[in-house]
Image (cartoon, rainbow, N blue to C red):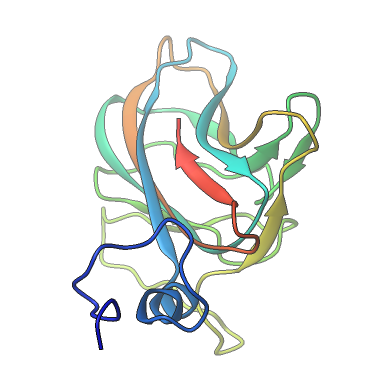
Length: 183
């Protein structure tokens, strides 16, 4: 059957029930971005992904990839910013102060709950007490005619903070032209 092989070209608009659309529904697409944390004794926000349309976020997580100064990072969170308003994706009280390179940060519950952290300074386990999927899914929608972003927002008293994080988002487009792209 021509055109249905999994090793073929992925169509821009996949055919319903094609091998690509089945994989897309099962696992989702993965976007990633390395962000730099460099605020100087203040609160800062870093745009990570730009949203078009509506997508279902299956997993939102990050790893600390480098750090020179990361002594004080408080009030951290992931949020959705529509160019005027902020909607929290995680509660704005996450702390990464003193965390090591390789620390995992993940959205593990609804937006009223702090992100989960596996700080690899010691061995650690992150699990869902309700025996459900570890990551918390949500649906996000772009504000009409406005640039809408998934952001990382944090406060630091470091002068300046100096670290990078690699952020990953596994998502499923809910409309034919929906996207979530690194910015």
